[in-house]
Structure formats: C-alpha cells, structure tokens
Image 1 (tube, rainbow, N blue to C red):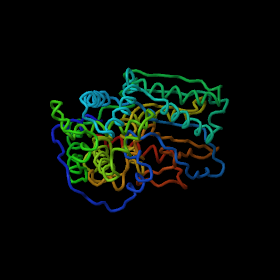
Image 2: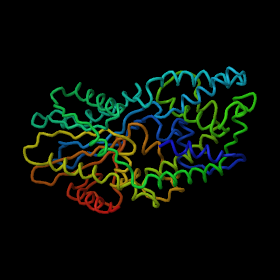
Image 3: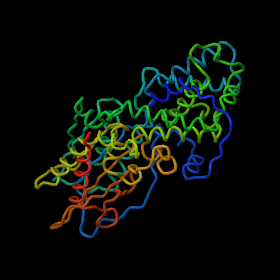
Length: 431
C-alpha cells in the first residue's frame, strides 16, 4: 500500500515550507510518547495489557476463531535499496554532512538486512506471533486442553511472511498443548479468501493520494531543512528524476521499517525528523491508510466488500464447531492488513471499523493501533448447558464491541445476534 504515495511524491514534489500548529490531541500524545508509532501500518506490534471481563456464570470457553496479520517484516518494495544506492553515491561524491554519513551507515545496515529478504518476516515478527499465541493459551487454557476437541484448522496466505507467522504461532501453542492436531492449508484459493482484492482499487488509490497530498501541502515539513542537514550541496543535481521530497520520502520509509528489523545504528525517525515533521508525516499517512483500507464514509463499502467471503467462512466454520460431536478447538487464519481491515469494516468493530470522513480520520482512527504489524482479531465462543452460545471479541488482545449491536452482558454477544449481524452486513456488500 506504499506505491501510491511514492508515485504521488514524484509527481507533486511537495515543495513544502512554513509551519502549522497542532492542537494537542490523543494521537499526538501517543506519538510523542513513542515516535515509532508514527510508522502506522509499519509499526511493530505493541501488546498493551487490558482488563478481562469474566464470562457469565456457568459459561466456559470452548472454541476460538482467529485472524492475524503477519508480524513485523522487511520492506516489500525496493525503497531501502534505492535510498542506499543514492546515499552511497553521495558518500562517494563527498557531499554528505557528518550527520549524512551517520544516516548512510545506518541505511547500509538496514539494506544489508534486506538483501535477499525483501518482504520477509523478521525475528521481531516471529516473537510477536509467539507472544500472541502464548497469551491466548494463558487466557484460555481450557480451550487448548480439551481432550474431546483437539483439532485446529489453520489457513494461511501463500506469502512466506504469513506462513512463518503461522508456524511461530502454532509452535507456541504446541509447546503448551502438544496433543493438538493441526490441519494446515494454503494456496491461491486461501490468499483470495484471506486478503481479497479491494473493490475499485484504482479509485481507492487515487482518493488516498489526494487526501495525502491535501494534508501534506498544509504541513510543517521543510525540505530545505532536511536536505541541508544531510547533504553539503543539492543532491538532485547528481541524480536524474529525483527531487528533494522523493529523497526524504525514501528516508522516511527506511526510518519506519527500522523498528521491524531492529537494525542497530542511529534511530532514524528521532534523529533526522523533528517531532513536528513526524506528526505531519503520520497525519498524511494515516488518512491515506484509512482511505485505502478503513471504513470511511466515502469508501468504506468498497473495502468491506472484499471481506464478504471471509465473513462467510467465519460463520460457516463457527457453526460447524458448534455442532454436536465437533472436535474443533480453533480456526486460525494468517494474512495481511488488506484482509483484517476489510473484515473489521464489514463487522463494524468499535474502533477499527469506526466510520468517519477520510480527511478527518486522524483524530479518531489510528493506524498504529488498528492495523499495525501482527494485528489480530480473536472471537472466543462460550457455552453453557441448555443456553445459547456467547461470543466475546478481542482486537489486538483487548476486548472490543460492535457498533450498533447490543451485547447480552458486558462484551458478550449471543452467537445468533452476532451471526445475524454478519449476515446483514454481507448482504449489504452488493457491488
């Protein structure tokens, strides 16, 4: 989802100057607390402990339906290699400042980590999924140690970062409950199910580019300050078809992915970007991300449409697990941001699926919260003899609700109510 911003900056040039003041808001405070959050969809997973509501009396958890985005990964394009080559040529030409040399050395280390590993899961990404699985086991040991329900069905995207996320997640479960029996499946069929192409992708990309442009043109980013900090002379004179904004964008991307690779060296985000610039970059990126995969007033229906078959799969597999004699403990799915966000939109999850105008998203919808690396949705099913099954939802391991759907008690929904809600939402996907 980075391609549209790269093309945008090449075309527009972003000749930005001047300062814009922000009113203090929640997203600002959170990014000031941890600037790595400004990486948005590239932000590594943060587990934040939260309260746990006990099940109603007599109910016990027995089945889990899960979707997880792959964990922290390397960059999926050639941006790191491109900025490494540009800085390398600048180093050879002797036009880097002392700070520019520090930048070059760190980018060289990030590039070395990327060689032959573009888009692949990092060690941090593996730890993220192992941690999520361990906490899921610790929270629901009865689900994973029920002798009559040892089966776990596992679907994965064909991308190796998803397959390795799946492997680490299930290995962590297996270390705790070795009696579980796994059925692993992948293939183009499952890639299409878990991360279906969005409806009218070109329309979404164009809209995302536009909202990004509008926000960045009113930002505090000063290209001259950044270039003068890194180069002793104008680098664009040495490189054809590269402007200052393009250079800064590529450095921004390398700075954002650094947390995923845990590459040693200077902290690029905090060393080379002012806090005001970090906030401005984030605001533009966040609005573009929300336009592309969020439940915006303008384009949310386009996004939700992509999850209709996935939602149907969740319903059908849950019903099968609820049937008498079922041996299924869990259905686990491993995919991408382009899979879990449409699902959150279709379900109308509180927070992740909230619907606002795309240009106004940043104050209420945060990509580092809603679609970071290893983002996950867990649906935990509870049963009680003679009573209807209940379901509790977790988003990034925190209890969550569904907009407009009344729970029975606390965060617990009747499965019949939740299923009917999903059926209605699927029926609304009429493109």
